[in-house]
Image (cartoon, rainbow, N blue to C red; front, side, top):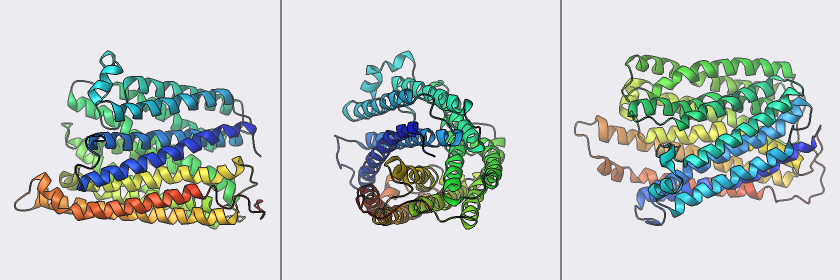
Amino acid sequence: MQYQSQAVAKPYFIAAIALFVAQVLFGLIMGLQYVVGDFLFPEIPFNVARMVHTNTLIVWLLMAFMGASYYLVPEEAETELYSPGLATLMFWVFLGAAALTVVGYLLLSYSTLAEVTMNKLLPTMGREFLEQPTITKIGIVIVALAFLFNIGMTILRGRKTVINLVLLMGLTGLAVFFLFAFYNPDNLVLDKYFWWWVVHLWVEGVWELILGAILAFVLVKTTGVDREVIEKWLYVIIAMTLITGIVGTGHHYYWIGTPEYWQWWGSIFSAMEPIPFFMMTVFAFNIVNKRRRDHPNKPAMLWALGTAVMAFLGAGVWGFLHTLSPVNYYTHGSQITAAHGHMAFYGAYVMINITIISYAMPLLRGRNAANPVKSQVWEMWSFWLMTIAMVFITLFLTGAGILQAYLQRMGENPQPFMVVQEQISLFYWLREIAGVIFLIGLVVYIASFFVGQNDPEATTAS
């Protein structure tokens, strides 16, 4: 059953995809600056391109999480959204804050931006991934609180399902842990210690709960498998996620001046972090094999299965590659970290957001269940283009990282950083080519929303 208030998800999804395009474009600019150092300098220096690349990633993923929640919560709770007006207002506040922040990054020096936004009153700027001006961070908190209120009230007055409650737990954790972005102590060790309470406990903790809830929702809708079966899987996956993810924060504490026991705790529990992702893969394929009907929306099913596989590879396998402290001693901060980060974010969070967008947008646009066949073919092409390109981006960065670690840190005569960068530039060129193919895949994905939309063939659910 469709609920009228689910329509508020549509602008969130559209804005998320637009920001996704911006993120990829700035990623390509950065990639070229690795090998052509003066490219777009001084208009867009590397540090600015990097800020825009990472910040648009965070904002568009959050935007899509919100859209997903506004879509699935009313359907799960079997009631209209508590306040569609509040959801729409917060969309414009969030989008406006994000746009102004990016404009500030591009037009002002970072020190000037800090001065203009009165960062001295509550200093929070200057840290990786948390570069946003304090005023933007306050805006994010306001949006998050209004969003949680809206979702919480909807769940409170409707049906309580495991999917809704797991999603609410993840969203609440997202808001709570972001508050540590305001804690910026003078002691660098203390700063880094709590900085990870935002960065790690988001992506390797509470965001995984959101991922699990969205994946479960799509599988319930597309496979027809009993909800009880899917919910049992969800309980176990979430328990493992929280156990390994929380204590696994320790793999960031190896070399920042924290006690030595973190090398044991971080290594052991981080080595267990691939387990929930492997379970998610088994879960997704198991449920699809048990399906009681063939849903007409083939791309949504493809994205769902792709999420499980790529999240396991990126977050699980590539995370494990350098998570043990004796290995991390040599690989820390190398291109192996970048390889893990790219595939993990794509597999776990980009793909799950595209999964829910792929499932929901045909319904939000008036289709009964799916887009026309021609549109679905284009979307499945986009899946393979983006996914294969990301696999090669990861492999090229992994090759660069292994060579970098050997030449710079492990050889008999360790070489200087910039000398090594010159020697691994071939990998950067190959990564850039793969990035262009990824962009082509993204363009094909966007085009799929417009291809064959007037075709008369039926798209009703079977």
